[in-house]
Every structure is written in C-alpha cells, then in structure tokens.
Length: 141
Image (tube, rainbow, N blue to C red):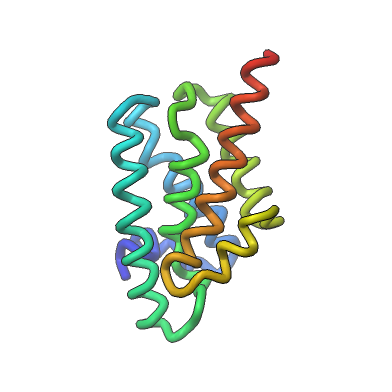
C-alpha cells in the first residue's frame, strides 16, 4: 500500500492523481533523460501493474483513487528521454494530466483491461501521447 499510494499521498482528499503525477515528476527528475530513466520507467511500469493490482484487491475497488502508482508510471512515460528542463517537464506534466483525464483512444480501452494492467494501462497511453506532443513541440521550437 505504501508504494501503491505514493507514501499515502493517494489518500489526500482532493486531486490525488495530480499530486501523484507531481510526486513522480519530483522523484524522477534526478534521473535526467538517459538510460537510467528508461530502465526505471520500465521497472516502474511492471512493478506498478503488480502493486496496483494488489492494492486494488486490498481496497476492494476496481481502480481506487488512492492508488497513484499509475500516475507515477504515466509521468515517467510522459518525460522519458525528454530534456530534464523545467519547460519540457512542465508541459509534459500538463499534457499528461489532460490526456489522463480525457482518455483519448486507446486509453479508455486500456482502462478496461483487468486488474493492475487496466489501472496502469490508461496512464501509459496518456504518457505516450504527452511525450509525443512535447517532442513535436520541440521540433518546431
């Protein structure tokens, strides 16, 4: 539960997903944009699926708001291999939250997957979209 809820940040009554993605952004920032970040993102994704599944069973809900490991995974994907500068990370964070909330295709479908895969899946999709949009922005800036 400690990991799934981001040291219990997920139990904050307002905007736990937003706080979870900010927590992830802060925790991942020191990794920069290299191989270490990619490895941590891959490990976090796999572990996040397992941890989210177990926590959802303990909490007795399909996708409890208190579980924020999925937001940490999503922001890790959203910032993967992007320059570790404030503008890029801030834009990635805003876009990740936008895509996580609106759930564009196939995020909504990924959310319907069973257990931890569904809990984390939509955030991975939202992170991919955010990452791609930031990359396009960087191409034209």
